[in-house]
Length: 355
Image (cartoon, rainbow, N blue to C red; front, side, top):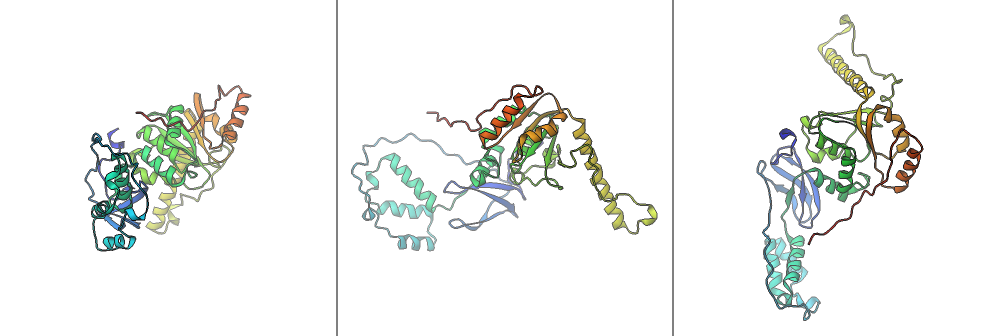
């Protein structure tokens, strides 16, 4: 399992997550020891020392006693005589963000009247506005799921991390298992299954494209070949037993082979055809432990197509951002004896604050 764990250092070619001062997450690819991305406050090019582990930490200090109550504070432009033009001039002169913030504090008429909590809020707000610092975030499954949910939750079908953890738990995903997925959530489900498999087992993705599915989430996960080794894919046509794949010929008589280039091309065709046939045989052999569906298509049709390949007592997990879809599916499954105890659960759990 050591080779499948997240790498502790930033490597050349990795895609990492960067948290900006305003708490936004950005996805950046490392190229030649530098992180290149455009941001209005941070600039176009930022240098990152590749190979060094980054683990930012902060020490929590007890609050200082104060008699301030904020009752004497009056809001208005007169409390901050530092104008926008003066601040812009400081930024253009190359002044550090801490110097600009300190200048604002010195010119603030009511800063000393604030409570310690208000002062901390004021400083954080100014740091987010003027700071040019950024924090690298380890691209774990949790952080990548959070990044995609903030970026475009519709592309991952409104799957938050609590939803994804429930899906993987209900499907009983574990190393060495065999799993079928229909993933229209940009590869988030497949990424979660591969993370739990740890390079051991089988993951077969059914898609609606002739080529292997493009899972954008994999870009941030930085999977190596050991992790993605269990992954294979078929489209809906090739997943049918009575379908005969139409593929170009991979073998020719030796007298018709005119060049090494043609011979190499035939070898590649044969490898592709063999991979397709082996993947189909693997599907038809069945004995899959779970079927996970996160698709825009009718889940009942998908289940009827794929349930013959499931092992006994296998789990079927269906996610949809619309409750009516899973409610209708539950009603249909209850009328068929081969499906036991279909139930609907809430995908989003309540966030509790521990005090």
